[in-house]
Length: 321
Length: 274
Ligand SMILES: [Mg+2]
Image (tube, rainbow over all chains, first blue to last red; front, side):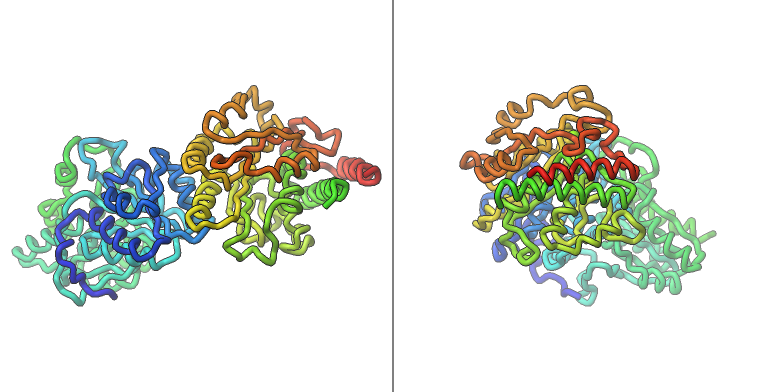
């Protein structure tokens, strides 16, 4: 388990900015780290990386299938290739390359989906990635990691460099406060982070929805309801030991994600718990099976109840079941 | 190898391709026979790759984009000593590693392929890594003519030229047929040479069933410094078995026992006359 970062200057930034800063820091010391971009270095915050380390960035242009195929070739020859592209394009247009060239051929590409979920807000459905957990969960040999805050982001990027296996890192554009300053709550891929503990209900969230989940827990506390909040940053492999412990120790479970409710983290939790014989009030929160309402990221999330108010209301509702 | 020895290898490879397709009761017969001479010359004359150096980062790479013609690749890899040829008796059988497309579970295979339009982007990435590491290895890939409409090929063609990757060579097994019919009727990709030239590639054409000509052209790679090389290999689908040549049904037709014996007899007479 890694300790909480000592570099407090990175906290409170968008996770994708932290990703770029940490990657550059690591790449400066390791010339095998290569950023591969599809005209996406601006949104990926890699302009400085490209200026400072021009030999370690490969610009593909707007061609995501080729982005992933080329990254697979680089990885096969020993490069630690980070293929960086908006999550919506990376995991849809290049899905066959992810499936075959990366996962099936076991070329350890680090896929980085930026501006994920509904980060692009009113740009609409073409730019939303609400399918990525679902499609990647159905592919063998890939780890799916969705950091919640700057600390998790830093740790996830470092872990992705060390691991020589395919991984998908998913980041958003919103500035993210630290979830906790408790240094004992470390980070390890495949292990959910229990950010706060309470016995009445568990809120299992990931990515940018963990912070509103934490705010919901505070609202619930005001009403005498004690909530556990988990950052389930690794969607695959799922931390089933933690899920079992939560099911044993808490009365109800709400899952929250910036993803369609079909096939996401919530369904993964439900599938595991049901097959283990746990039956308790359970609610999957996320984007329903529809094209989203128009709005900014926060407006869209609020509209579908993925907010402190929405999550706490849902928690109270299922506690009455 | 002398041209005669290479020609003998080709006929022997064709006999084995047919044998294992018949054994598997499945296979891409026509395309495997059209690309046999290309694989023969690559593995016996051009590529610095062997079972001994396959783990070396300095080896040449061969990525078969037209993965469905795996029977030809497996027969050549077995002949190179990557695995015992007898393993191919399990081709496509329950629990065998020898499936109907290239897989890295088989020693000697670089990449898992089968979906079309994937070989060239991976080859380009591998060649880019060689340039970064200042390594001398080269990357070869073979595409079917029928897979040229896949857009990813053209994306990768742009990248290869943009980065001046003269260490990548793509070979098109241009047998002019695909599963539905002639390429020109399905989706006319001609003129292939002008298209790739306009993308910044150095292009040569060759009789892809002539081992001597293939040897000459592949030994001339890279054709131009700073440019990726494309070989348009004009081939005959079903080459070497007269009743299969240029005949659509042999795209993935499997010969019955009598057809198999007729084909072997024809290849034996070719061998006897070399
Ligand atoms: Mg063809």
